[in-house]
Length: 270
Image (cartoon, rainbow, N blue to C red; front, side, top):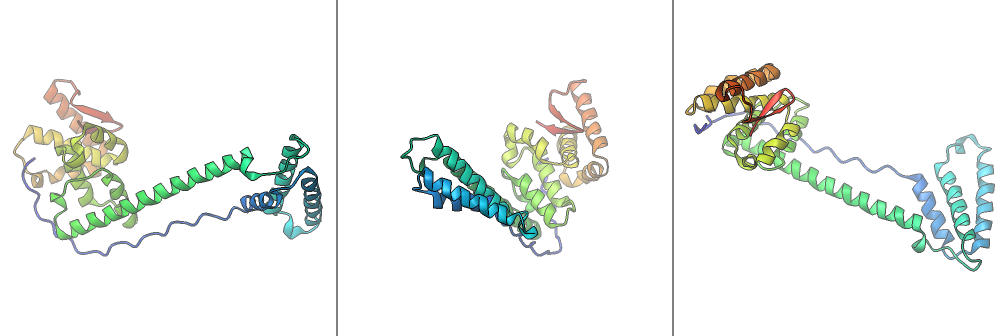
């Protein structure tokens, strides 16, 4: 499969606009707990008991009003006063509340920090995928996509381009990835990357790659432009294409499939 790809000229299409990341919803219960903790800081058991009684009184008053029946913050504040009251009751009489030594509070803060770090990592990855999708879009418009080697994560960039197109499969992107997978180009030189592709790419693309691999072995000097039918077959009937690739493997290896990894209805070249 060493024959160069024939130049491709697509009609220029504008890059899709980004979809803004959804804002984190307001957590009224968390706000209520934080308010209570700030107020309770430095309070002794008697002061907390008085605050708890005030919170219970407010809860009884609110229960009389229908529009306050679902007061999430109020219920959270009452529950937090009750928890702090029980916490101080188990300590020495002279103890005062300090959120810095409250194990429950510290555990919550640690969990929030970890969640924030995870969200930030997800946003960075989403930005990286979007940038790579922009790059692939530009390359396809310049007609140089076929000369570009794929990188780790291009499977996600493919999904992003498909999303931007409203779910329509990007045939040229899929053909490019199938050729790269079959020819072990770019990050697909690594067997682990080829194995991982089985769970990252759709069955038609995997079947296309498997067909390209076996057809190239059958006719070593065949050009990619002569194998366009493989993409059509894989798209129209991916299971049949995978079965055809498996048949070619058996014919080549005498009923042995040691040269391929079977994944679902597709076969990934290894």
